[in-house]
Length: 434
Image (cartoon, rainbow, N blue to C red):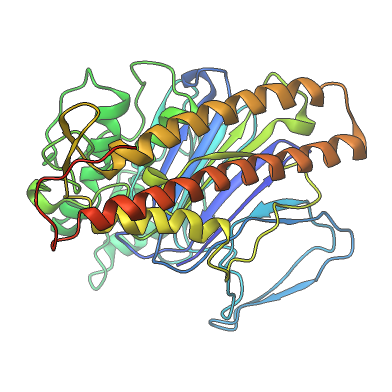
């Protein structure tokens, strides 16, 4: 139930893999013609619990380990000596080792295209090319439908998939669905669409689609949603962040409100990190890959833009409560404890809560500054190359990480003061200044 992601900055490649149970993470992919700047975007929330995460870079090597052995099930496989540089967000404590691949889905992208892959039973897999002008929000439900394997530019699958599914569909003991006249519907063959999905999976698709296509009116109780859709407006990394931060925000289904229906939202308290992998098409490949990373809950954190052509990651001790992860996790924990509490803001005379009083203003200001920093560092990056460029990008990552964390630590102090005033032992109506 851990995630391994990598982005090779110098090559402008990205991939995201996950090993998760049903009812967990959420993925968003956006084709280059559907984004504001022609980038490809691959994003995901990692939902698992409260253990720490950290951001790490693995350097390229021509003499790497040649064997991988899983500490979990003793699975063993060979590895090439030559390995590309990649960044990852592993667990702070790796008693079970690193998980490098798993069940459910995987996304692969470069500056030109994105492929989304699903892994089913019987050693099978299928992949579909994300249409350039469309996006998809993918919960923990298999969604790749009918495969047109004659169209190799847009579909791929494991060897003899059609023959296998046909045989299993005719086996009286198995009776696998999904095979019709020489074609396979992958989600029908290996996925589910039941009462559990109606609570945990399909509502997330509804929420993401209402944000990116507000013109499309749908019911949250629909039995199926279209996988790839064209957004009403071009999508930015910030918009993807809004989707991944949503808990049915602004609707009667909000888990921060009445939570009507009890549907499982995209953003949940068990988020440990959220990332948006952006491959920019109109800049040199040496700084085209940006990993936007939000530790803990993206709704109460901030997406930091990290270059991936780097020699090191921001200094961190994921077991230390002063680390970046625990700084942002503290925010999420305080908000979660008081998410239904309101008070009268003395400056406006209106009801508000900790999110609108403290988190949102800080998030807006920090995000604005980070974008300005990124624009400025891009200008400098144009004048550099080789080791000097790598050193500069590494330095900028550290600068942005330090800036954001200090702002969040200051905000957390304010949150703690304000949340104490919201404790049940005090009066129900409170006013206070900044």
